[in-house]
Length: 368
Ligand code: BMA
Image (tube, rainbow, N blue to C red):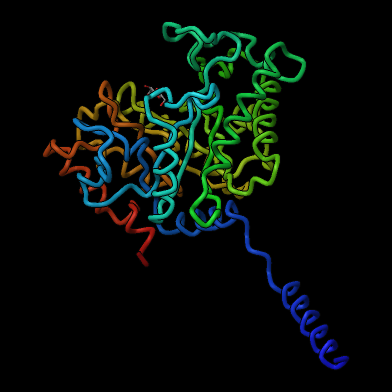
């Protein structure tokens, strides 16, 4: 009996030694960061906002995707948008039901894709529970003083904490059947150097902006939240020397991925020149600070010239070590992705897809 107890004790001790020697599993965010770094060496991933929900002439049909139907593969990166979650809405500001969004986020992760999440929250200072006419109460109601009102000590601080809590609960619910969290890139408070959102540079100080980012991150990170890769993504400027960028940057300890949101709204020449000027600075900074870099949003509304894909965008992706480039959604009133029913779009988007530099889903999941 005594002998048996000793053996049992030894077995337990041996087990303990084995477990303590065993390397702890990297957190999901570390796994994602590692994967992003490996993939960045292989090419630039293509991303599309709201890809599985709707496209040109269709909405909410399972397994459809304009990108898939144009080039035969899903985008490597899919973007999802949380605007509305802060109020407990069932659908986001673009009418996407959050329960469906949750399923598609998990589905994209399970098929081997990368997930990125944006958030255009309503304006906590001017939002009411009554219906308001746009932009009243929206992210685009760019009222001075909103940040002062939601930071600690402000009149809307407590309200804003309830908004952050709803975001946290949604993000925390993104889990696979086995309970494992789905890792994702989160990029709140984007395009903050512009004036169009209430968190924009003309409506607050740099210190308030950084405090907002910190408040958001600390609230979301509280209670074991190992699945977020944090992104900071200003808008295209064309003249963003490092000092200007640093003024608003939340800090190396807070940011994993530096993004640029770069749309072609003016001339082609301006878009190329400005994008390259900003990427020259940001890519240098990202390399020195060991950060990932991406075109976190880009596009040419309604792509009036389909050669934009391989003639304008592709050369930029070839010249910079970008992790990914994500084009915005194919909405009914405005689209940024490829159009499967338009032969010119198909030709040029396929050339873009076939280029060795661009990575789509199958390129990043060769084992599947
Ligand atoms: C903007 C537009 C809006 C949309 C918002 C959030 O760029 O596409 O229509 O509501 O993004 O997705």
